[in-house]
Image 1 (cartoon, rainbow, N blue to C red):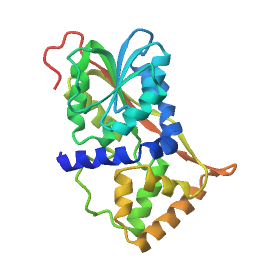
Image 2 (image 1 turned 90 degrees about the vertical axis):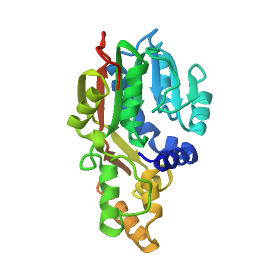
Image 3 (image 1 turned 135 degrees about the vertical axis):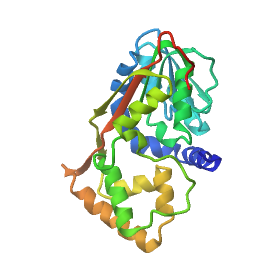
Length: 277
């Protein structure tokens, strides 16, 4: 995948670190328990959280007694996470070229990080490489937009009133790993065994019908880039359609959008016959 996409994602996440935590923090934390359970996170294990962002997964793993390292390509994210979770070691680094020796960790996690990488297959292989034999890896991504209402509403509005063919760096399909078969295949291709995929029910609670548009515009990278390239007239129509659709999910004065996650998990073979790839 192009270096331009990688640079685009890094620059984007360096600019929206504060906004992301406020907009997506409560939502993305809903998958942390199942994610840590999938790698048997417990006291004493060495755990690496890749694409650690604000540090939520790393902090929760540390609360379980794990010896945790977090790595993220965004310097502002690393700084914010380190300030919040001083008991965890956070480092700036590339998920596609992890700065750790082979077999350094008992467990590796990645909460919604695969969506923002130029070469997610390389990141999966790197996760396998830094695991000890028998170690476990787990990741989360969003379910398909037909189920994850926030994305379904947003993409539906852009398709109806805007233009999807805008000049953004070419990146991997955003919902590639939402397909269970593709997640299983990709884990096996990276060298993992015993892959298992499941859905995690989640609810995104937003304070108003306009909050979805505001969040997509200010606290995302790819979607925000797509919105930036719309005409003012199209953007107004997109915003109106998103607000109207969000209104269908009003419950007691707040919007409650179903936003399920897909959890993929696997392990590194105890006696691998070949290197992680």
